[in-house]
Length: 80
Picture 1: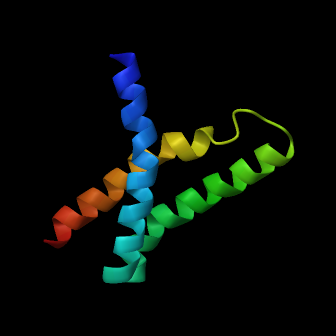
Picture 2 (picture 1 turned 60 degrees about the vertical axis):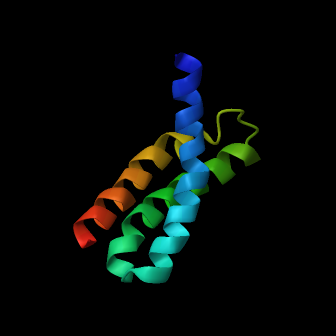
């Protein structure tokens, strides 16, 4: 069960990237930019972590992706 949950969390990152690109393409910037700003901060933290040699550098990207994906999902439901 833990392996399935871990895989689901990790697969949220590529799903988020696809959803973010679609949101940027179709929605106004004020709706689609909120998770983009959050993930940009996580990406900056990841780059700094990789430069310092940390093996846990992408943890913020992986852990924030489900929340940002949920934001885009709720926004999509409210825009329907």
